[in-house]
Length: 417
Image 1 (cartoon, helix red, strand yellow):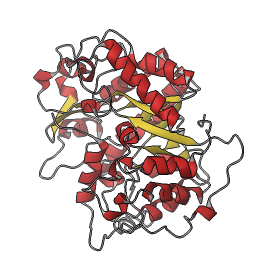
Image 2: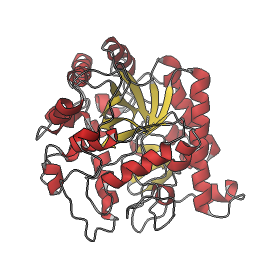
Image 3: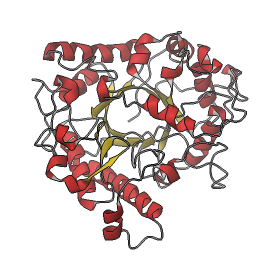
C-alpha cells in the first residue's frame, strides 16, 4: 500500500503547474517583515494547529498492531508535543478511509490500529484524544475524509461487513483506489451519518475535512460516474457543474447537521491552496497551478464568501517567491476572499518540506516558515496557522518549527472557538 499523504498530493499538484521561471527565493516578501506584525491583544485567540495523520500510519500509530497501551501512550505523546510547542489545536484524522478510530455505528474499525480492518483495538482512540486534549487545554478537531474508501483497488480486501461491500454500486475505482461516488444522494447521506455518529458521541471542537472531494486527476483515466450523472444530472448544463453542486450539497448539509447535533462544534475545511488561476477566472489568484474548482470540483471560494463553513485552512504548501504558486501572492488573495465573511481564515503550512533535500533552496532555510507567519501577521483576516504534520513537528529537521516558536509563539494563546 502506498503512503497516501498530503505531501504526495502537493507534489503531484505541482507536477501539473507551469514551472517556467519558478525559481525559489528566500527573501522576505514586501510587507512581511517583523516590523509589520499585527500586534495581538492580551488574551486574543489564535489558531496554532498541528495535523495528526493516521492514513497508512503516517504519524500515528507508528505501526499497526501495537498494544492498546502502546497506542495510547503514543497518542498522548503527540498531544504533549503540541503543548511543548505552544500549539493549541490538534487536527486528528479519525476517518482516514471510510473506516473509524472510534466504535462507529456505521463503519469498521480502521486497519491502521490492528492491521486488520474491523478488528477492535480494545480501546477508544477518539474518545481518549478528546478527553486528554481538553485536559491539556488543547482543542481537538476530528478530521474526516469524506469519500475515500481505500488506498487500494480491490473491494474484496475490505472487511465483509464494510458498507462498500454491501453497496458495490456506491463505489468507483479510480487511480488504483476506491472511492464513494459523490453523485449519489444516498452516498452523501451515508457519509454525513458516519461523521455525525462521532459528533453525537464526543464533544469534538470541530469537524474537519481535508482537500479530497472528487479525486485528483490521474492522467489517462476517467472517473466513471456516468450512471449517476444520467440519473441525477439532468438540471445541469455540464457534468462539472453537477459535480460541484454535489460537493456544495455535502458542505451545506454537513454544516447544518453538525449545528443541529452539537451547536458548539465548528466545521472547517482545508482545501487545496488554489481555487482558480487568474488566467481561468479574473477572480482567481496570480498562480499557474491545479485548480480546485475545475480539477476536484470544489468551489472553495464560494464556501468562504457565503459563510457556509466556520473556518478555512487553504494548504499554501509553497515557498515565498515560487513563481507558479507564490505564498506571498496567495496570502493576500485568501485574505481578500475571507474579508467580510463569517468564515475564519487560517493558513496551512508545509512544515514537511523544511529541510527535505528534495525541496528547493528556500526550504533549506530554517526561517522560511517564520517568514510565512510574518507575512500572515500583516493581514487581519489571517487568524492563525496549521502545520503539516505531527511527525515533522517532532523531527524538526533543520529547526524550522523551533524558529516559529521562538519568533511567534513566545506565550500561549487560546484556541479560537
